[in-house]
Image (cartoon, rainbow, N blue to C red; front, side):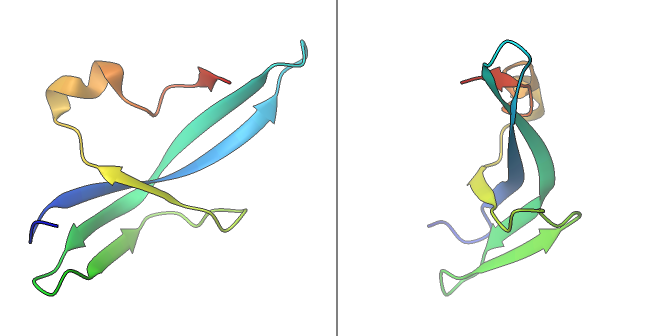
Length: 74
């Protein structure tokens, strides 16, 4: 892991639609950074209701059109 590298933290909620399809809603929960010793600092803006968080590399603002925060049918 690279020191200072930024990550995004998400809470993913799965809901069932009226037609029975499962939909995943990604909510931005905060950010994380890698420390010199390889550990993480995680700063949360919200707390997940189910206790689960998903961490992934931060995307550039130019890539927001492909952002995982959009609802995705599963």
